[in-house]
Image 1 (cartoon, rainbow, N blue to C red):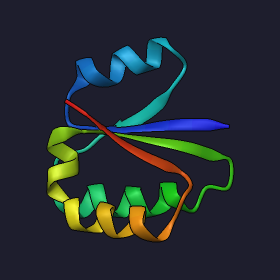
Image 2: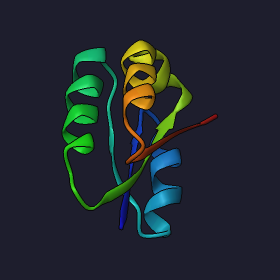
Image 3: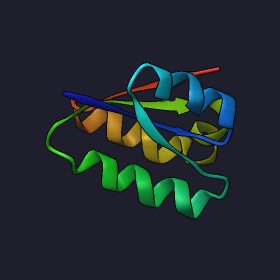
Image 4: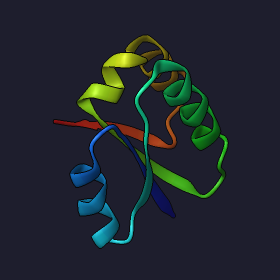
Length: 78
């Protein structure tokens, strides 16, 4: 099982890359939403990690997804 990171902070992403977790640096709401939707379609993805900034951009979309789906697990880190 894999994990992915969605963040706007290079340092945040680099910390996860050192642990073998890939991800994206994104700034605007459209990019964040588009990539979140793509990540949720990956069958072998177990975890999506959001930085607080990116989560806040699409909070309603993420919460709706969490209510309807058990996997991948979505977590927010500050």
